[in-house]
Amino acid sequence: MAEQEQDKLLIRLHVYDTDLSVRIPREDEEYYRKSAKLIDDIVNSYAKIFKGRKSDKEILYMALIDVALRYEKESDRNDTKPYDDILEKLTSEIEDALK
Image (tube, rainbow, N blue to C red; front, side):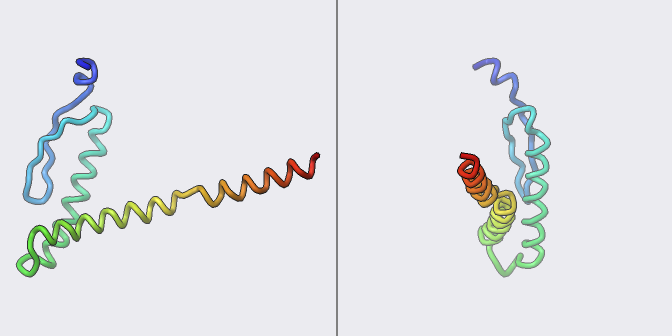
């Protein structure tokens, strides 16, 4: 357990109007920093448009939806199941033909 704690790093991330202290795996630091910057950029872009007309909570939810939408679209682009299904069918057909 102590060894796992030594592999952790305490960093501070600034997101929108908040500083967060986060203990992370050392090898993930760059991902955390890039993620915080992405969130900060998205929230700031929504805040520029909606500040004063929408609550901070609504602006944060819009940013969350934006991030989730990007994630879902990327997941769909990386979905290999249709290809796996085709390959499985072709493999079965080839094996049947060779019998």
